[in-house]
Image: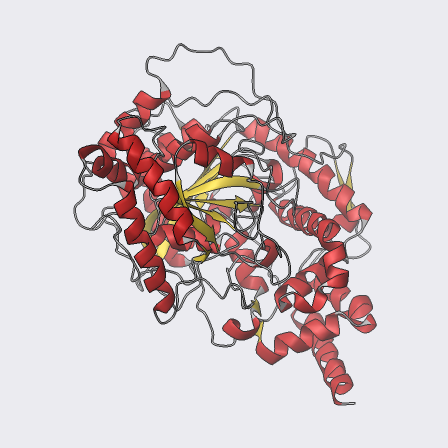
Length: 609
């Protein structure tokens, strides 16, 4: 009787709050026709979404109610309306749907390369090895290569330091929980091979001997591909993902697989299950790393490796990179093969690197970006070109900003990011106001697409492993089950419109500028570590500037540009048209000059010491 009364109490409270606090929305009788090519509202302020922060017993109770018949027919539909997720019901969109945001490379004239990619990257690294500011700096790929080339350290010695650091960070209080699976023998074996190659002066690539880790969603022999769960990956992997194979072929030392938000269903990195635990933010262990590639960002920020790989379906590379004060790249959809990664959402997810610097991101891009016959997208992608990123200024570039959208973030973030725009302008770039039409439609349509595709893939797990899932995962999949085929098709019609708008915008500007996130890393509460949490408002603020890139497939780069008064990182995002990652690196390199100093994280291991 008591659970029934509690369920009724929660339901009544939700109905009361829904009617009293619900934001003004589209009237039920309204039906808005979207004319092809004609944009709706541009850059309007974000809606006042509703959702209490839940953890502990209230979260358990709410998940229980949500999965009753009453929850399915009353509570969850109300939650959808209160957060405007029923928006697609009231739109008449005439464009045909685009189910995969794959865009053919433009037929542009091939310019003769004055320098090959390796020469350009070597020059970039040389520039970074003489920074203008003094004080702390992350150890990047160039620092490792300098040690190996001069004989100051060998890859095997560095590997021993990393093993010691991995042992130490799990004994610390609280444990870092960045790398959740690693093997001493595997690390030493790869390091010994790299040491021999350097001794014989025949390294394989710029990544030879460089420590890397990969998100647990990516297949890496001989580890378990658990995808942040307690029930998947019961057997060790016997086949590498394409990116894992490419890293091995480049000579990288894979130090293990990194932690993640369970099944990629959240943006905090909170994962209370028995195999994982919650990764801690190296800048402040009492704050989240961001997710879902939580361990990858924590490992880079803590100095365990200068390069990590993650997947990004709703900011899952860029959000943790931003919260942890490092660089994150989501490439054009199809740029890096996702073969060997769990296909949680086939139309929104891109693989991308998390790195210590823009230069390191460019190195990873040059090695990993390549058509893969085992992956159906990106087969016609252009050859990576970096010839235009070595410029002393930004003259000739046109940077687009929609100030209404840009300013929809916390005050401290806005103040720093506005100064970053001024810095780019001072380097010769033109800053132009641009429309960003129908961003509320983009927000809703992206959520419908990613959750519907995840629910499609995870339906058998939802039915058979429901009790083994984290509470937040259960709730998000319950929400996903509310979306209909009509919602999904209309969302993909909206994708067609949004991609068309971007094509028009990129005829007048080279890049679109935004803050990376609308908030900084949220604080961890004690109950989060036991049950996880569900925080709708923080999720929306984390994803606000991320969703456009995932929904339409355009690339985005996040670069740290400052810190809050309490020392949490603030980052800036640059987005460009499809296949134009080079302009992201060009602007990103100048953004690194804006930050006059880098604060040392509270948790940091100098494995080159």
